[in-house]
Image 1 (cartoon, rainbow, N blue to C red):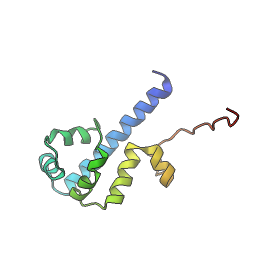
Image 2: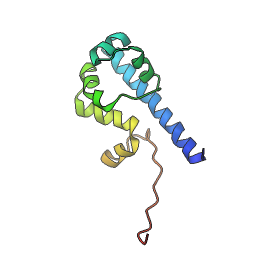
Image 3: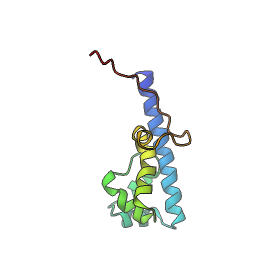
Image 4: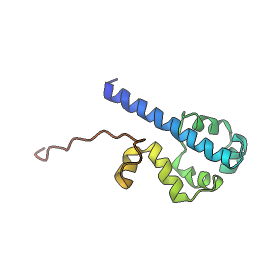
Length: 114
């Protein structure tokens, strides 16, 4: 694995862990257990909540609305925040840099003569 690929993998892991902490804080602020959260978002296994909060996975996009509803958040706000963690390149393209947590390497322009 190249050093650039290793750095990208490390950055992804760091952002997933940060997303998990954010989601856990929202869940706890609502007074929900992991089991209750899983039930309310329609998950079969509450351990999926633990995996997400531990940074070992990500919420499937088709579940964003259920998570936002359960956490008492506006859908657009939830989607943009989760995008900041899960898809920082897209987030930056749409919204610009956000407080330095999502570090994006500049991309070299393609040679137009190709």
